[in-house]
Image (cartoon, rainbow, N blue to C red; front, side):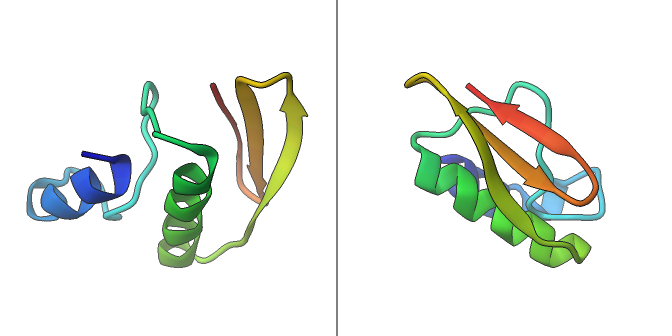
Length: 72
C-alpha cells in the first residue's frame, strides 16, 4: 500500500488538519508518487510545489514556499 492510499484510508483517524500531511520517516514507492502526494498536500494547505535538486539516483528534493523536504 502506497503513501497516498494509506493517507486516504486513515483520513478519519488523522491527528492533523490535513489528509495528505507529510510526516518524518514517510516513504514512497517512486518519485511520481511523492510528487503526487506533495501536490495533494499543497492543494489542501494552499501553496504550490516544484522539484528541486536531484542528488544521485536515490534522492530528490521537493520545494514549496513554506518548507523544503528531502526525499530519499
